[in-house]
Length: 206
Ligand code: FES
Ligand code: FES
Image: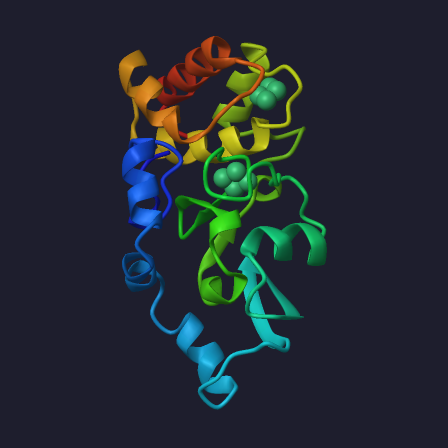
């Protein structure tokens, strides 16, 4: 969706464009935050891994310290080490968007990034986007339009769509259709989701 730093763009960019970006390692690396992986390398005297490294990830406004091997993806760090299980592992290869989180406000596929690459960045997961008592506009609209079936894809959609409506107030249905193109729903709940995102967008964002 939306622009995802050019490395991951679950919505707002075509799947072809997103995959093209992912396929070029040097482009992805060049677009990542300066310093994070480099810092990790420096800590190990110029060589990172294969053992664990101490990293601090800023997630939902809180610093979380952990020791992880540099090969660990952000998705696995969130789910397996920090118990933030809202992001889902489905394809594990940057195709479905179920693992979407925000990185400095941009949606990214967390299965396709290393956790150490995200040190020093602002990570927002679905757990940081509202509560059942105080939902954001996208969450409210999903409920209103009954925009889910099994719900497995829903957290990724809500995260990606939140970034989309923040960037695209008053979006047309065609813009919404293009905007949700980075996420897949196996249940095919697209009609409700498109209406939900259009509604949230008209309310001025999330
Ligand atoms: S699990 Fe990350 S894109 Fe599918
Ligand atoms: S609601 Fe089931 S995969 Fe989307």
